[in-house]
Length: 225
Ligand code: NI
Ligand code: MN
Image (cartoon, rainbow, N blue to C red; front, side, top):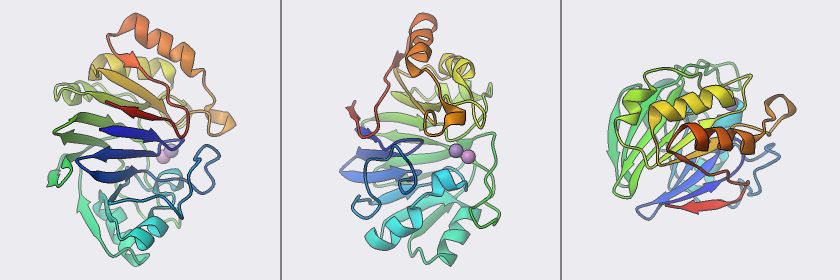
Protein backbone atom coordinates (compact mmCIF):
# COMPACT_ATOMS: atom_id res chain seq x y z
CA UNK A 1 0.00 0.00 0.00
CA UNK A 2 1.10 3.52 -0.73
CA UNK A 3 0.18 6.42 1.50
CA UNK A 4 0.62 10.03 0.39
CA UNK A 5 0.24 12.87 2.90
CA UNK A 6 -1.80 15.76 1.48
CA UNK A 7 -1.40 17.99 4.52
CA UNK A 8 -3.51 18.34 7.70
CA UNK A 9 -5.58 15.10 7.97
CA UNK A 10 -5.77 14.39 4.25
CA UNK A 11 -4.17 11.29 2.78
CA UNK A 12 -4.33 9.37 -0.45
CA UNK A 13 -4.26 5.64 0.19
CA UNK A 14 -3.48 3.47 -2.81
CA UNK A 15 -4.25 -0.17 -2.16
CA UNK A 16 -5.51 -3.04 -4.32
CA UNK A 17 -5.22 -0.77 -7.36
CA UNK A 18 -7.69 1.79 -5.93
CA UNK A 19 -7.18 5.44 -5.02
CA UNK A 20 -8.85 6.29 -1.71
CA UNK A 21 -8.85 9.88 -0.48
CA UNK A 22 -9.26 10.38 3.26
CA UNK A 23 -10.58 13.76 4.48
CA UNK A 24 -9.65 15.62 1.26
CA UNK A 25 -9.26 19.17 2.58
CA UNK A 26 -7.16 20.65 -0.25
CA UNK A 27 -8.60 24.08 -1.12
CA UNK A 28 -7.60 26.43 1.69
CA UNK A 29 -5.18 23.92 3.15
CA UNK A 30 -1.81 25.71 3.06
CA UNK A 31 -0.01 22.33 3.06
CA UNK A 32 -2.03 20.46 0.44
CA UNK A 33 0.33 20.72 -2.52
CA UNK A 34 -2.20 19.06 -4.84
CA UNK A 35 -5.32 20.51 -6.39
CA UNK A 36 -8.88 19.30 -6.01
CA UNK A 37 -9.25 19.85 -9.77
CA UNK A 38 -6.70 17.21 -10.75
CA UNK A 39 -6.47 14.52 -8.05
CA UNK A 40 -7.99 11.16 -8.95
CA UNK A 41 -10.15 9.06 -6.66
CA UNK A 42 -12.13 5.84 -6.71
CA UNK A 43 -13.31 6.41 -3.14
CA UNK A 44 -13.44 9.31 -0.69
CA UNK A 45 -13.75 8.54 3.01
CA UNK A 46 -14.80 11.25 5.48
CA UNK A 47 -14.19 10.92 9.23
CA UNK A 48 -16.50 13.75 10.38
CA UNK A 49 -18.36 16.82 9.22
CA UNK A 50 -15.91 19.61 9.99
CA UNK A 51 -14.79 21.71 7.05
CA UNK A 52 -11.13 20.75 7.43
CA UNK A 53 -12.16 17.11 6.79
CA UNK A 54 -15.10 17.25 4.35
CA UNK A 55 -12.93 19.69 2.42
CA UNK A 56 -13.29 19.29 -1.35
CA UNK A 57 -15.13 15.95 -1.14
CA UNK A 58 -18.24 17.22 -2.95
CA UNK A 59 -16.32 18.77 -5.84
CA UNK A 60 -13.97 15.79 -6.25
CA UNK A 61 -16.85 13.31 -6.12
CA UNK A 62 -18.84 15.25 -8.72
CA UNK A 63 -15.83 15.37 -11.06
CA UNK A 64 -14.52 11.81 -10.60
CA UNK A 65 -17.76 9.98 -9.75
CA UNK A 66 -15.89 8.53 -6.74
CA UNK A 67 -17.98 6.76 -4.12
CA UNK A 68 -18.03 8.70 -0.85
CA UNK A 69 -18.05 6.66 2.36
CA UNK A 70 -19.13 8.33 5.59
CA UNK A 71 -21.60 8.05 8.44
CA UNK A 72 -25.32 8.17 7.63
CA UNK A 73 -25.85 11.86 8.48
CA UNK A 74 -22.94 13.07 6.34
CA UNK A 75 -24.08 10.75 3.54
CA UNK A 76 -27.56 12.34 3.53
CA UNK A 77 -25.95 15.80 3.36
CA UNK A 78 -23.65 14.74 0.49
CA UNK A 79 -26.64 13.58 -1.56
CA UNK A 80 -28.25 17.00 -1.07
CA UNK A 81 -25.03 18.53 -2.43
CA UNK A 82 -25.35 16.47 -5.61
CA UNK A 83 -22.99 13.60 -4.80
CA UNK A 84 -24.33 10.63 -6.78
CA UNK A 85 -22.53 7.69 -5.19
CA UNK A 86 -22.45 7.36 -1.42
CA UNK A 87 -22.09 4.47 0.99
CA UNK A 88 -23.32 5.18 4.49
CA UNK A 89 -22.11 3.30 7.54
CA UNK A 90 -22.01 3.88 11.27
CA UNK A 91 -19.85 3.40 14.32
CA UNK A 92 -18.77 -0.18 14.87
CA UNK A 93 -19.94 -1.25 11.43
CA UNK A 94 -17.69 -2.85 8.82
CA UNK A 95 -18.25 -3.29 5.12
CA UNK A 96 -16.22 -5.14 2.50
CA UNK A 97 -15.28 -2.99 -0.49
CA UNK A 98 -13.06 -4.02 -3.41
CA UNK A 99 -10.01 -2.48 -1.68
CA UNK A 100 -10.60 -4.37 1.59
CA UNK A 101 -12.79 -3.95 4.65
CA UNK A 102 -13.47 -0.59 6.28
CA UNK A 103 -14.78 -0.22 9.84
CA UNK A 104 -15.92 3.05 11.38
CA UNK A 105 -14.43 3.26 14.86
CA UNK A 106 -15.12 5.60 17.76
CA UNK A 107 -13.75 9.12 17.91
CA UNK A 108 -14.37 11.67 20.65
CA UNK A 109 -14.93 14.98 18.89
CA UNK A 110 -17.70 16.99 17.12
CA UNK A 111 -19.08 16.62 13.58
CA UNK A 112 -21.23 19.62 12.56
CA UNK A 113 -21.14 20.19 8.78
CA UNK A 114 -19.94 23.46 7.18
CA UNK A 115 -23.53 24.78 6.65
CA UNK A 116 -24.57 23.93 10.23
CA UNK A 117 -26.27 20.61 9.35
CA UNK A 118 -25.95 17.72 11.78
CA UNK A 119 -22.96 15.56 10.88
CA UNK A 120 -23.78 12.70 13.26
CA UNK A 121 -21.00 11.24 15.34
CA UNK A 122 -17.34 11.55 14.37
CA UNK A 123 -15.44 8.41 13.44
CA UNK A 124 -12.02 6.90 13.07
CA UNK A 125 -11.25 4.56 10.16
CA UNK A 126 -9.89 1.02 10.32
CA UNK A 127 -8.89 -0.34 6.91
CA UNK A 128 -8.20 -4.09 6.79
CA UNK A 129 -6.58 -4.95 3.49
CA UNK A 130 -4.56 -7.78 1.99
CA UNK A 131 -1.58 -5.40 2.16
CA UNK A 132 -1.98 -4.70 5.90
CA UNK A 133 -4.23 -2.86 8.34
CA UNK A 134 -4.28 0.91 8.64
CA UNK A 135 -5.99 3.08 11.26
CA UNK A 136 -6.73 6.78 10.72
CA UNK A 137 -7.90 8.16 14.06
CA UNK A 138 -9.73 11.16 12.62
CA UNK A 139 -10.00 14.03 15.08
CA UNK A 140 -10.19 12.56 18.55
CA UNK A 141 -9.21 12.75 22.15
CA UNK A 142 -7.23 9.89 23.63
CA UNK A 143 -9.44 7.01 24.78
CA UNK A 144 -8.44 3.72 26.37
CA UNK A 145 -10.52 1.59 23.98
CA UNK A 146 -7.87 2.34 21.36
CA UNK A 147 -6.35 -0.83 22.78
CA UNK A 148 -9.22 -2.79 21.16
CA UNK A 149 -8.27 -1.32 17.78
CA UNK A 150 -4.65 -2.27 18.52
CA UNK A 151 -5.74 -5.90 18.91
CA UNK A 152 -6.51 -5.92 15.16
CA UNK A 153 -2.77 -5.73 14.38
CA UNK A 154 -1.86 -2.42 12.75
CA UNK A 155 0.79 -1.90 10.13
CA UNK A 156 0.16 1.86 10.17
CA UNK A 157 -1.58 4.26 12.55
CA UNK A 158 -2.24 7.90 11.62
CA UNK A 159 -2.75 10.08 14.69
CA UNK A 160 -3.45 13.77 15.26
CA UNK A 161 -0.82 15.48 17.41
CA UNK A 162 -1.82 19.14 17.05
CA UNK A 163 -3.50 19.59 20.45
CA UNK A 164 -6.23 22.22 21.05
CA UNK A 165 -8.86 20.45 18.85
CA UNK A 166 -7.53 16.88 19.21
CA UNK A 167 -4.99 14.85 21.12
CA UNK A 168 -1.75 16.65 21.67
CA UNK A 169 1.71 15.11 21.41
CA UNK A 170 1.79 13.56 24.89
CA UNK A 171 -1.59 11.86 24.53
CA UNK A 172 -0.66 10.75 21.01
CA UNK A 173 2.37 8.92 22.47
CA UNK A 174 0.01 7.21 24.94
CA UNK A 175 -2.24 6.32 21.98
CA UNK A 176 0.72 4.64 20.26
CA UNK A 177 1.22 2.51 23.38
CA UNK A 178 -2.43 1.38 23.17
CA UNK A 179 -2.53 0.87 19.38
CA UNK A 180 0.87 -0.84 18.99
CA UNK A 181 1.27 -0.07 15.28
CA UNK A 182 4.46 -0.95 13.40
CA UNK A 183 4.53 2.58 11.94
CA UNK A 184 2.90 5.75 13.26
CA UNK A 185 2.39 8.91 11.19
CA UNK A 186 1.44 12.23 12.79
CA UNK A 187 -1.16 14.56 11.27
CA UNK A 188 -3.39 17.54 12.13
CA UNK A 189 -0.49 19.76 13.18
CA UNK A 190 1.27 22.89 11.80
CA UNK A 191 -1.60 23.71 9.43
CA UNK A 192 -2.58 26.70 11.56
CA UNK A 193 -0.70 28.53 14.35
CA UNK A 194 -2.91 27.11 17.13
CA UNK A 195 -1.87 23.52 16.25
CA UNK A 196 1.85 24.11 15.72
CA UNK A 197 3.89 21.26 17.20
CA UNK A 198 7.45 19.94 17.19
CA UNK A 199 6.84 16.64 15.40
CA UNK A 200 10.48 15.58 15.70
CA UNK A 201 10.36 15.92 19.51
CA UNK A 202 7.17 13.84 19.48
CA UNK A 203 8.88 11.21 17.30
CA UNK A 204 11.74 11.00 19.81
CA UNK A 205 9.20 10.29 22.57
CA UNK A 206 7.59 7.58 20.42
CA UNK A 207 10.99 5.97 19.80
CA UNK A 208 12.01 6.04 23.47
CA UNK A 209 8.73 4.78 24.97
CA UNK A 210 7.15 2.48 22.36
CA UNK A 211 8.25 -0.07 19.76
CA UNK A 212 6.58 1.81 16.89
CA UNK A 213 8.54 3.53 14.14
CA UNK A 214 7.45 7.16 13.77
CA UNK A 215 7.45 8.48 10.21
CA UNK A 216 6.94 12.22 9.73
CA UNK A 217 5.72 12.83 6.18
CA UNK A 218 6.13 16.25 4.63
CA UNK A 219 3.06 17.36 2.65
CA UNK A 220 3.21 15.65 -0.72
CA UNK A 221 5.52 12.94 0.56
CA UNK A 222 4.57 9.27 0.16
CA UNK A 223 5.34 6.10 2.08
CA UNK A 224 5.14 2.60 0.65
CA UNK A 225 4.64 -0.15 3.20
NI1 NI B 1 -12.70 18.24 13.53
MN1 MN C 1 -9.96 18.83 12.28
